[in-house]
Image (cartoon, rainbow, N blue to C red; front, top):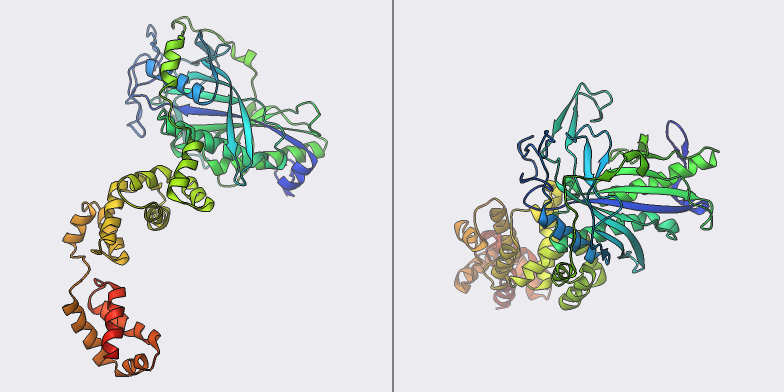
Length: 503
């Protein structure tokens, strides 16, 4: 048992042995539309603060919103992919709340008439068990701006000297996906939370509606959790851990909150309905504010926007464009590529499925593509603290690099040197190999001369080879490879060493 400043925190294992956890997840997805939800402002990551604003997203008097048609298409597409019913009629609403980083001080959202409702998503856990998570709703809304608190030690408003607000994010299209209470998962509740967000992220990426970069805030998860004595007991008081922004953190936040609430209840206390903040550095949650109910937001219909009325033809047109479901695609590709379950799982967990697929499409074998992305490139990405997809090499270049190895022009060692050049921006693999003078020496004449010199310098090794100690040839092979600066085929060098030593 660990402790916080207030109450003991039970271990996760002890907590789930004594209580039945119930979870609900709210995932906010930033859409990758060219413009914001209600105006023509562009939105791009890391733009100069307050450079992507206009009277509409700044909430200036007299400015009128216009709904982004592409955002509506994306919302319907997401709803269909989540097996939801698409509402034939719906209105936007004003959600009134004090938003220090929302200039108009209300959020335009949907309340009782969401664009999509009553769906489900099947989530496969690592051991193959499938958990069906029911979706209550998916609705459209806009994002808020971003506050930066300066001068404090925690990055939060408490203790800060002053705060800066960037309104670039205000008005970016969001889809909020809300699950129904997830019950019956018991000790696997944290694992299910992580797997659900991972499965949802993969689905959204396949739809092409969002970049779903959690580290950039494109996808954020609010985790609701409560405990009850038994599965037959009424639901307990829930807390909502806000804006968790990585898969690992979703799991850690749920695990901690299970243990924290269990500690409160076993100590005779009551759980407070509130929002909480998850701290990446310590893995704990801390209190935010009392959790508001829907009535507190004083929802009312947005008077400046007409209702959304997608007809059946509109919906079916978008349904016909849905891609192959990710789970079905994974199984098909695994069969085509001949990957073992663990190999495929590693590729998926590394977000390398599309990279491997594109490399295979460019001409590499599946195993070669996996070798590069899950081996050398994954190692370099980890060392640089970056994502595989952000590495400065394309799947086509990886396939071309493997092609140079397959043709015998490069050894694996030389290929890694060529990769250095590609990543440094020196050009495509063939150009880098030429510019750096990297190419396997295939002239047996030059190799024979190098072999003869190495054999003459080590007569004792020659005697061992002639005596049947073939492993002794390694020293000669190493000397030849060193003389040839690694630009020889080691297998061919070995053949020549054994042949000439025996002669």
